[in-house]
Image 1 (spheres, rainbow, N blue to C red):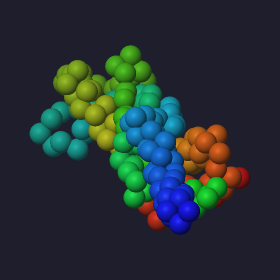
Image 2: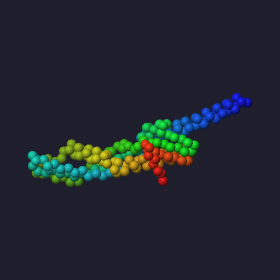
Image 3: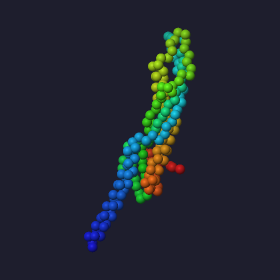
Image 4: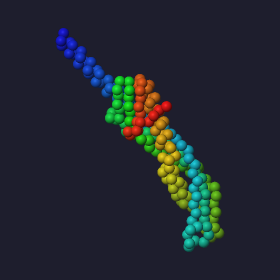
Length: 186
């Protein structure tokens, strides 16, 4: 009788210990998503250039171009591991990596010359010069992603996605964090 009681107690403790491990493994299935794009922005940029400050060239040369860039940002779920998950009964805390900008792309057909002024003794802007201006615009757009709110929106959307995923798993209280800062859900 005493052996059965000890065996029952051992099975109960083992079952309780393996349940969180199984739950963690179910949550870690999110890693298979890898990079989840949670926001896509379309940004218009005006590019202007002039090289009239060059003293040894006669005449001005100015150009005004517009371009449309697509920014994609989201979360790299492949970076999460068991240390990022805390389970306490029906409450789960998941710490996600901060959002990153996955891509900034400008299609060549989305670059348009709006204005160009070329002095009589000057040559027009070459394709290479225009490409360099577009590359500078792409870099400026990439650098301004944080001030545009792209990364914050990506984190809010990822938080909503992960929260719904965990609630569908049966958790009643879900806390999503990025780094060490909790994100409040409405």
